[in-house]
Length: 341
Image (cartoon, rainbow, N blue to C red; front, top):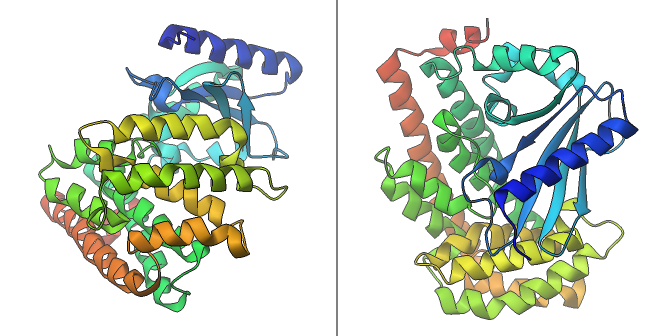
């Protein structure tokens, strides 16, 4: 099947139109994610990231809708109440970047115009940029401080570790860019960090994900086990929506493409994160594949303490970047408390 950006945009608009017809009370709908980029496909697969704003609290917050083997909708449902303070959203590390430059597909009563105007106003001023990064860095540090109290061989512990890594890397990304996407996480971080003079941090990030201990061959060999665990977990009644069966090929083909690239270790973030999501739902013998693979990467057991030390050092660098940004622009705690006013 030949997939083009134009055909994907047409599908997005058609689906929004259908849902608005079924739910005329919807406030707004907009497109985010990879489809806003020049090359949305990876391994000839992609998702279409849509956000629908509801007048009240929606019954579900996220839904995966398969359209074909290669394409699915990834839909978020947000209540209107989350958008009530646009000036505060400009410093929100996730909603702020999302609202700055999405593709508007539906807007009742100019709601989106009002919200976006508030977000964009002074969005790139240093104090607002610094605040977005600092919120992520603070969250990452708080999560990291709890890691020594958790069991070193648990999927849930490693998911917690990865959550800290996610916020730490995105503390750098959201200063001037959008949050890092899951399949292109490490590639995007390098493209942001290197021009800014933080190129060594890209290598550090690969290391704290186990890249200093394995090579491409280990990752290729592990793919069948990853796919088996993803499928098992995705069929469970309690499964995470991110493990929906429609996303198996989306990840698998994306990983295979990255593994054949000049930077095969750039697959690590999505590979580890999705496998840990799956393993967190598995028990007993079903954890054997995950345990073996994570031991090879030194991510669990005796190696976990070392990884936490590496993450600590990475966080120190992130905090140093933010401190330098604050010093350069004369930002202090009082400024941080008043940036949204």
